[in-house]
Length: 133
Figure 1 (cartoon, rainbow, N blue to C red):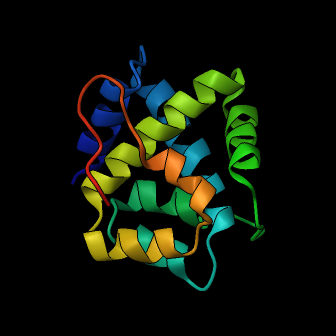
Figure 2: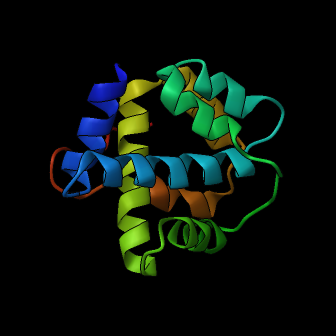
């Protein structure tokens, strides 16, 4: 998947008005996801994404055991949005991530996340249904 395709899909699925808003949502979500992953998993995911997007996963300065609520709160803070909007954007970004990365890599990522994170993999927004991972 190209950078333009990834950003365009996020913009469409999250119903964002501009490419800039889509990039901001992608950065906030993937940087936060990168903070939750350990043992090189963020690098493994990044290697299957366009370079410009993969670097967001690698921006993480800390590795933390964030709960799902803390994950969404951090995305909201980074996007400067209300919590429900950040949840919607994060799910849209993750839905595109699932389309862009191999099933094996998605399984490796999910293996590092507690069961409560299953919520982030349920996309019911416009522009496509999230595939099972």
